[in-house]
Structure formats: structure tokens, C-alpha cells
Image (tube, rainbow, N blue to C red; front, side):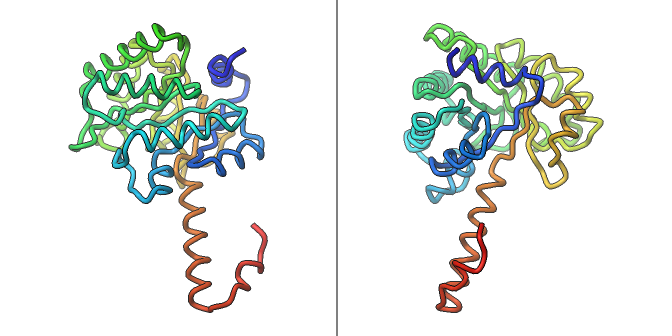
Length: 258
């Protein structure tokens, strides 16, 4: 069984997939050592580690280099967060997806947000892109490569559920493997979504959405924490750096164990 097949099976196993989100090789190796069965990269975390904000502000080659380093050095499946594809040109987005697949990952997240302006791509526009991506992946030998179609309706719309379900159906018909809905948090909405979508639904952790077992009961098949772990690691680093400079004493490095 290859990595792509393994990753697909994790979405249909008895237990939902709890995906660890990494931003560099050390974080990926740590998550693997802890026992996570698969890793998703976090574009936010990768951008921060390179001194940038999220939002496709770094060169795609630099972003891909981090993904490649992770994929080549761990033994569990990796899903790559490539935001909206790092281009507004369809052919370039498809090329970036293929380049990502070629470094050894088992899947991608790709979102329907616009990057240079606010708003979402039209349903037909994004569905067409997903269809072309799937055709090219199949043609290049990446059959069943996991396309996690992210929709940002809950981050940008006032009444997001109806449009979320409409987009989910259109994206799945166009070749997506699963649906990722960051920002959704109400139990009723999550339950209605999972009952209406005939594919794995991925939910993002929020301060009010944290419990894996509860989400399992609502029908969620994949749960991830995005940039939350990288944020807390950075916050800890900043805190300790400040203490070192303030007190001129390294005692704070030894007073507690992580």
C-alpha cells in the first residue's frame, strides 16, 4: 500500500483522523514521535517560521522546500497546505499542485478564497479548477491523491451554511476527496454538514471547538489544529527570550520542564 492509499484509508477508518499540523522538520518529527498517524503542513506556521505573515506572501519554491523536507524525512503521510495555489493563473496553480505531489505528499488543502482581494471565487470557477487538478493528477500517476477542498464560507459569509453545502457538493462532483470548513463551530451546523456531505468533513480546532470525541459524535472524519500549536510554541519562545533579556539570568531555562 502506498502513502496515498494509506492516507485515504485513514479518512474512512473506524476512528476519525486526528491530523497533526507541522511547520518545519522538527515539529513534524515531534508529532510523528508522539504517535500521530498523519501530518498536515500549516501555511501560517511555515510563513511565520520564515519571517512572513500568512497569505501567499512567500515564494512558492521556498514554501515547497519546507514541505519537501518534511515529506522526505518522516514515515507517515503528509498533506500539504498550499492555500489557494500560489497563483491566480489556473495553469500555474495546476503546475504547483503537481510539483507538490511530486515531492511525496499524499494530499493537499486548497482553498476557494481570493488572495489579492476579499471574497471567494465563484462556485463554478473553483469547481472547474478542482476538476482540472484532478484530471492532471490522474494523468500524471497520482490516482486517489487526496484533495481536501477548503471553503472559507464561515470566515467570510453572514449566513454560511447553505452556501457551504452548495460549494461542498459542487467541489466533490469536480473531484475533491473531502471538504474542509474552517470557522464552523455550532454543533447543529456541523451535524447538518456531515449528514449532507457524502465525503469526509474536516473541522479546524477553535477555542470553542476542541474535543475530538464530541466531533466524532457529530460525524466529523478529520480534525486538525492548524497554526494553533505553532502559535503557542512561538509565544513560549518570545516569553522566554523576554525573560532572559529582562533578568540577565538563564535560570528560567531550567526552572520547568516542557
